[in-house]
Amino acid sequence: MTYCVAIAVDAGLVFCSDSRTNAGIDQVSTYSKMHRFGVDGQRQFVILSAGNLGTSQATIARVKRDIKDRAIQSLLTVETMSEAADYLGAISRAEQEKHAKRAGGFGASFIIGGQIAGKKHRIMLVYAEGNHITSSHDTPYLQIGESKYGKPILDRILTRDLNLDTCALCALVSMDSTMRSNLSVGPPIEILVYRTDSLVQETPLRFEEGSEFLREVKRSWDQKLKDAFRQMPPFAWAASWDKSKDKAVNQDEDND
Amino acid sequence: MTYCVAIAVDAGLVFCSDSRTNAGIDQVSTYSKMHRFGVDGQRQFVILSAGNLGTSQATIARVKRDIKDRAIQSLLTVETMSEAADYLGAISRAEQEKHAKRAGGFGASFIIGGQIAGKKHRIMLVYAEGNHITSSHDTPYLQIGESKYGKPILDRILTRDLNLDTCALCALVSMDSTMRSNLSVGPPIEILVYRTDSLVQETPLRFEEGSEFLREVKRSWDQKLKDAFRQMPPFAWAASWDKSKDKAVNQDEDND
Image (cartoon, rainbow over all chains, first blue to last red):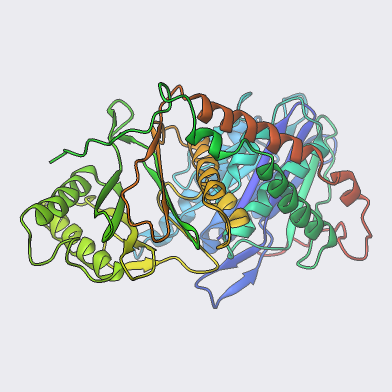
């Protein structure tokens, strides 16, 4: 399994991905799911991938080859992020269709984000079907892979005006919640922060299995959540609550 | 969609369920998913249901009919909670098979919990396939339906020695996280607390849409999570972290 999240705020973009892939619990490997492409000063892209590893590797390989071969269409020629997402989706579909006749389960999804000079920085989610969506003002993030465990904290914290350090920390906390609940999502964790209009290729920070910062995030978040829970209004209050509103009901069970 | 959770600790059992069912977003209805059966002083059962509403209603109807008709096997005759779960699973399978030849999607899952005099109080999850699992010392809860959003808080808080009020509050916070992330899970929320060895049928507390306690739980948890996040170690610390451990890497991207 995989978990990747990308965040788009006014200040820039944050990308975060785990590096564990598995095909059954006895075939666990480490692959980076974060790929960077671009020309400094002109355009920068980051792609995160989830799903079938064969499909995602073949797709990324093709994206690189198109750049190297100066193909008519490549990440160096697309004029908008939306066109980049369409291009990525078309390659992914083509790779899946090579095998889909013989068996199923070749789906892969991608997040592509970045900036082309003179345009807005954006993130797009490319579905296995090849189509795509972007983030919005109210939902400034996109997720692929095992997304549910880490979603609540993103929903509560993220707003467009946050600084990039806060967004990066939020992505790490979201990753931590996911790792706690799904063993097949795990370190190394890579995180890349892109500042709006910088147009330079950033180097991802990489947190290994024994990372002290990762352990500190885990320990600290666990403790703070427990403290937060202890400060909640007691349930006893509810049990003695105004009976006219939240009343104990003698349930009428006659649905037969 | 549905979310139900049951918790089993030394002090007793807590059952919590939402009451929203939907078949498409324009056909949203309210049905209780909590059903109680028992004879005071002898045995008490609570059943929570998720999945196909036709199957779960037919299953519950059959459970009631077997009690009324004094059938050879019913919740009044089973000798263990495990036998009760097997009985429930067999009915559920039979109901599904009535329709499964014509179409799919009739699956339903159940949690049954309670106590039979002289035996331990227990909770069991009955899968759509009819088999079942129980909770454990390390994982003192079971969930059915939309379970992922609300799982992290259960994993962090629940231990066998907690009091029932704390467990009930934890179930509500778990429900709150689920409702925030999945619109098709919603009030009324029912919660029932059973005290070990009481063997009396308890009345569920029911929190309606406008419930002040539910709103207070929501507001308070949201605020406390945000406060907790603000107190986390800053990400800037990671970015300047000991390079020998969590180092910024120049990623080698040659997987083609």
